Length: 118
Image 1 (spheres, rainbow, N blue to C red):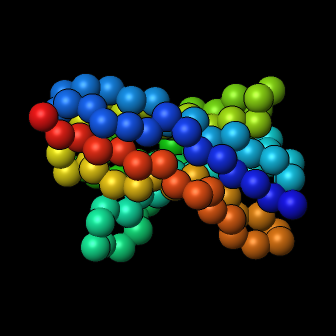
Image 2: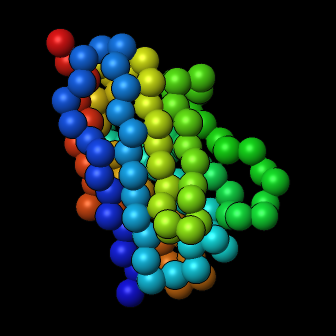
């Protein structure tokens, strides 16, 4: 059974930083690309960052509005993918979701709320 469990969200002031974590289980983590999405209140879910599987030399992909501020990384020894978010802006406020697409289907975590406000 595939499970994705996010953590690390919270309330932060503009300009601050947060690191989100997503612990994965139920599939071969090192063999799958991992992604972070977000969904602002009342809006559609959107891709934030994506990272290829271990051994794949592809560069991470980022949404234009987070490039240079967010960094996706993964630790296959811990089956965990991270999203380091720096220089946060109020428009980054959203529920952030971890995502994986496997041969069996597409899976989402429960989400973690990030609120950027003074």
